[in-house]
Length: 447
Image (cartoon, rainbow, N blue to C red; front, side, top):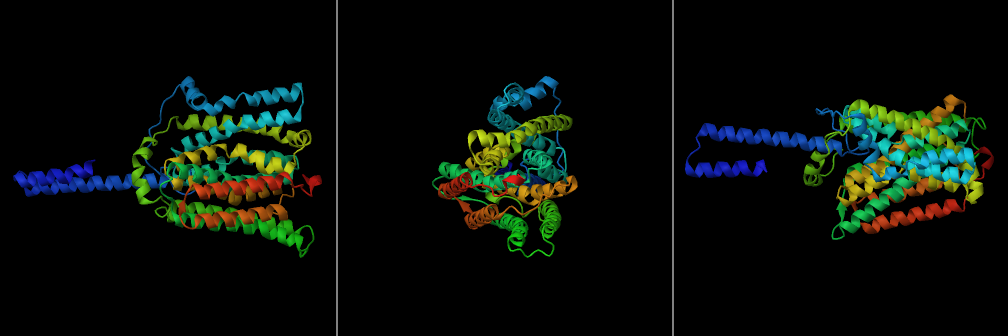
């Protein structure tokens, strides 16, 4: 409002002859300072809404730390979200495990119990990111943004269930790219049906390139294995997977650096969108809990997710038998729904507010994090644990990933979205789900 009032005031005063030259200059100087401040605020908001990062990364701006009592902190974190009504299902799963030992029920209750924990982990990470610089914030987001999938994968690796790890991570990538992004496009398109919603095409192209690089890393070990062209049979494929994983981790670190340091200005939403949502962004700038509260809650939630993940992983095979559902369907379709609950809700909410860059950052950004960070990280962790975790996801799964990335890249190339594109992505996900429902993993002995 100040930008409109100052020039009008100057005009009125000049007409009345009540402003001398010195006052005239000071008023213009004040206007320029206000414009500079507004530009800096816009840049901060832009950085907050960039790429694959959490919406709460604000650079090095001064953050007021709230002083909450223990009771108030519990109210903010636990009682403020309706999804937390599902929290009692976690302890119930443990009770069922020791009292009835029904694997199907233990799996279902654990799955439901972890869902609100995954969302609250995202919230605690977002709150902690207020107090860190963008680089540390980026690393926090990469680590804790998909910590649920990471913990489930580590527990599965400990149990030697390499195929469950591969299929769960693959399912999370497919779910984010097709279901989460599709629902965001569809809901946003219904709200703004009179126009095409717009997002930054440049960011979408770079993100598509990173996803194709991840496909390359996963595709080559599978091709090497199935063409029987290994120099050392049985070991060349594993060695290539480990080398490619290290390269992918370096590429992801470079991507974070490029996004946050070198080209931060180009990784901001469209100017029009930033201006429209500037007031909304300003409202979300203050954290709700202090830094140490965020760290403590992050520790508690991570420990609780770890505990429930142990019961969840142990019950997978039993649930598959009792429900007569393939383990591949459970791993690729059911498990990722838990880890993606927060992303799903967030992406839809942003799309319905016409913030497509944020929706894209949540959905595609999370897919990049899993494919370029979590998958190679699990290969390295398996290497350290003595497990032969590799990037050979088998032909069926690799083909699914490759086709999905190509389809999504085509939908993103125009830089626009509508409800029809969203519907097409959702229908593609249903085809994927149906395919895994009738797919039997040929390596059941090496689950």
